[in-house]
Length: 209
Image (tube, rainbow, N blue to C red; front, side, top):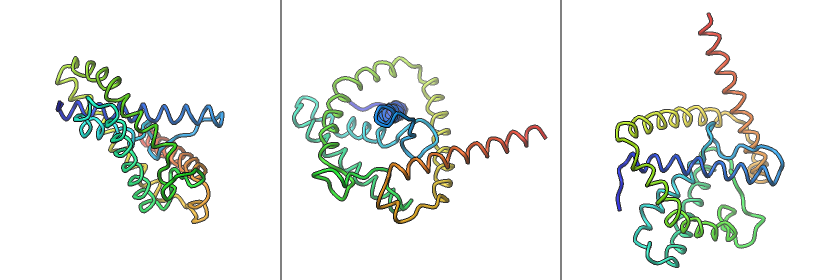
């Protein structure tokens, strides 16, 4: 079943925010400290949103076959994760994750221990979360839905522009690229936070003057 662009867009943000929360909570439990996952200022990981939309659109034909849905969920999300890792490294000269230390990995970009959850996530999205979210989104009046999507897209675009400019200026050595993704991500997150604070303080001073 096909939905409107606005419906898919709102669904993208829901899963992006949900993915960010899942990543942050996981790191909070593991490291006992807050780690901003992803490279954007806002609380979202777009790879989760893209993955959910791809699953929703491409795997609808497998809805009556859980096994095929599971396998295709693994395939679609693994390809997405690999390509995301590859292009982000080419653009920013850094990796946001590295599975080299795990068995059955491909160039450290994807590995078996994350591929299995992809399939389970595909089942959860198609059988549980999508029906729930669609039922809520369908109740939102069209004009309100349009306003919500426009506001979210503007915030998202501004976030991407600012984050891209800041990350492009972060000095990441080749050693860090090879050794420690978590360290790089943490430094970038701190750099973004400081830059944003500086921009906000400068804006406030301009308004006061």
